[in-house]
Image (cartoon, rainbow, N blue to C red; front, side):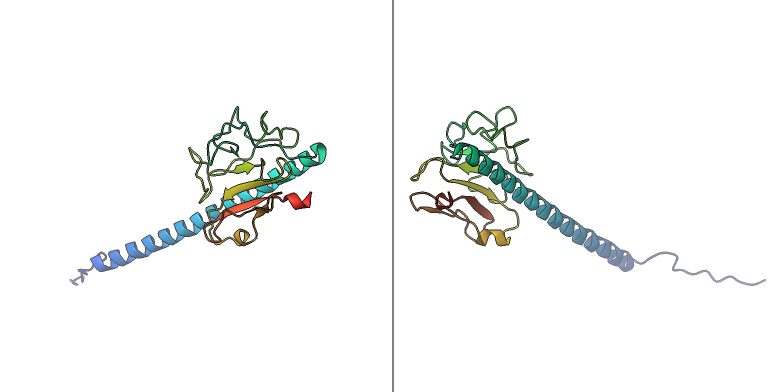
Length: 190
């Protein structure tokens, strides 16, 4: 009769299990970081597209009315009264297609930040709110600015933004590293 050798190592050692678990954890973490970065970039692309859509609507409005819509009477307190924003100025699902701003003829729907906040974040670091202003500084309705935030604080747009009002005041709310973008229609271009 032959004797069978029975191995005493029928399973994995604790060290082997810990190594496998560590590798799986590392891969899961790396995947989540990559996935989160893709989501951030997608939201920023949407923000930029939304603002371009608003700017086109404002240009069409200007061509028809010889002025941009004044940003008063929007029921906004952030940053101060006289501004419109995509959180506080929302009425009936609209913040740009209202009696106060009236871009309804040029916008199918009002763009809002893809990751809206419950109340406006002035300044909009990391996004959450779109802000619109076109009142005063030497030419109410003859210039405008839109301020919004990007989650990618290293986005190259923040080095190209800024708006010049009719009295020569230059508005640039971003610091070049906080992701806040100021765009609009300079008074001098009209």
